[in-house]
Length: 511
Image 1 (cartoon, helix red, strand yellow):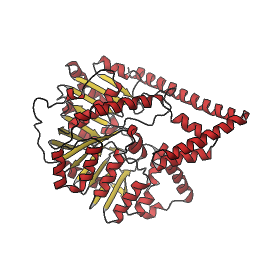
Image 2 (image 1 turned 30 degrees about the vertical axis):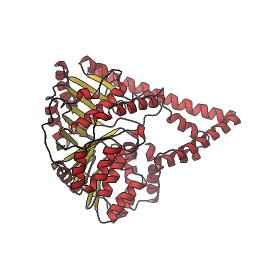
Image 3 (image 1 turned 90 degrees about the vertical axis):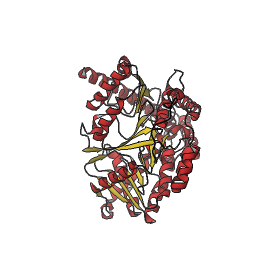
């Protein structure tokens, strides 16, 4: 069985890679042939490049993304513009965006705003009111009380609790993950999912095709459906029909009956729980919500699911407290939120910026990738220069060499600006957490890089005045102790090495 799975996986990957190579070769051949044998074609392609350059400059994209495309068009005026059109044309995107936008609008009433809870925050934590109002009033993500939170880090701590909660499911289990990898961890989950599906529980699984490109066979959805598990692939990778693959579903959400939900950086594969070693020790995190706050994460999953599904459903039908109030009472505040690239609203970045400006004493951050635009760098450095304790921990051992080098290209600006930058020496820091003044924290899937902040579907939970906030603080302080701080004298690179990293920094927005 394992041998057949590997052969199926290898065959699919080989076919897709071959198709991509044929597409690239065809593109180069057509452009080269047109310009070599026709002056008209050469002029036409140059005119297209000028028009595309003007279009790129006029778009409301981040400066770094516009800069790299204008640079490429100027460097290669004959085919730069055509390349942009080729890589940024996807017929399915507009159709899917329209479906998702309609689903989000239709489900707005399923996420009612809480004026009373908002007023409590204004009285007790006015420094965070701007962020709460932005998420609740503009993006329609309610802030809740009556929710307990549990911080789960590393993955080995997450694993048994996740299984325990899955076993409690009575009505439904919804899973939305970027990566699923067959192995011990997934097998332990699948065993429960099979039992629950057999007993009548509505079990749904959605995963990103690019995220599972090397980890799942092409017939995986059929395998799940044979077990009674509903399965959807997010944005299937079809190189002939979809030439752009930027907008991936990077979320990691699980909902159990709408009463319990998980959100964080952990995917469902062995390396995330250190059952398999990759890049040293894998440091990750998640947060579990029990109570009213879990409902928002449930809605996020259903919004994406219904955008793909042809089945007529109402999100309100899944609300868990129709007949009785939520029994959980808690004084802390939680505000789950998500980000989609189709609305041109940079929710992940805006929340981070709001929290940086709200900080009074300290800003602690963990992220696997650190590729920022100038506004974010300026905000972090300004906070440090204003006397705040600003610390960032990134990996020492990396999963992508070029992206890691691009990350390191930002160290010099940050360290010179007073930010303390650390590299996690035990292994790979995959956790995405932020804590402000030991009073508010964020745990989710949002990396501090262009892809997470501007291109991917993401999710996270903002928390204030919960025990979890202090746990995140202590976890980050421990991570700093286990890491090596990047010192100013270590940033005097050789000129050639500095130039190479600057080039990587320039092109990092399209990595």
